[in-house]
Image 1 (spheres, rainbow, N blue to C red):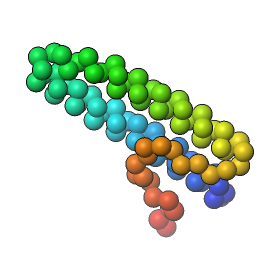
Image 2 (image 1 turned 60 degrees about the vertical axis):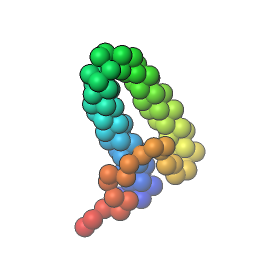
Image 3 (image 1 turned 30 degrees about the vertical axis):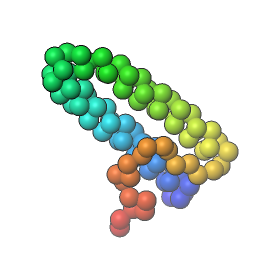
Length: 88
């Protein structure tokens, strides 16, 4: 019922959905690149995984700190899957 909580919930959910999309897309890209380079492309897998872990940690901590201060927060690299306002 609170617009503030609704905004934070939608943003957090969009951020988590975006991370899943990036992880699946990155895994497919690394697999294809690994096949094309006869296995050398698999060396990129830890780099992409580390990037997503850091992105999630930094984004989640900054979002929690903003919510604690009572501020609105937009997560980095977020795909807006859920609309800003509910469709009724």
